[in-house]
Length: 237
Image (cartoon, rainbow, N blue to C red):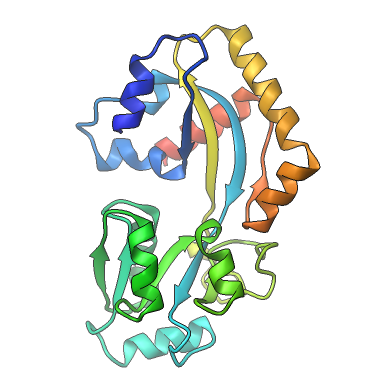
């Protein structure tokens, strides 16, 4: 929110951009006293991409699938922990939904940032975490983390061997994350259009698309209106 406030106070000239991800849409519900409102204080420019969360565990965990993991957690109710980058983050919300839908009893351990949680999953301090694939693709591929499931409707191209939450029997837990660009509300339409065109041109290049795909992100693009509708729909729901 502090970064958002900086952008909201900047001139509406298109020179100050705000990079956002899906969690910002939950801010009005989780932080009703927040000083910024995403729908009114900012104007959409473009969706950069769509990302997906994966459920990761320490490789020594004696399970290889989601059903096995749920059974493993249920054997010791209240003894296992899941971590997140803080209260209200996607990792926290997914963790709580996971508990509701599967009936497992685990304890939430919030950190200040996801970068702090990863080592404690790798060393077994915490049992599991839901985390964006972007942050852990390399760790999964090198065997430092084990991904049990992708919280998506289709397999993540960067992790084709990881089954989806739909395949694993819990379609109601399928979710997507997104990343995009906003500017201050009131930025002239020609400026927004120019920024949108520049981002779309970059996103269409082979280098950018290959880089995004390698970290489990589907390249985005499209109009400001399409991104604005996505953001507004997410805020409402």
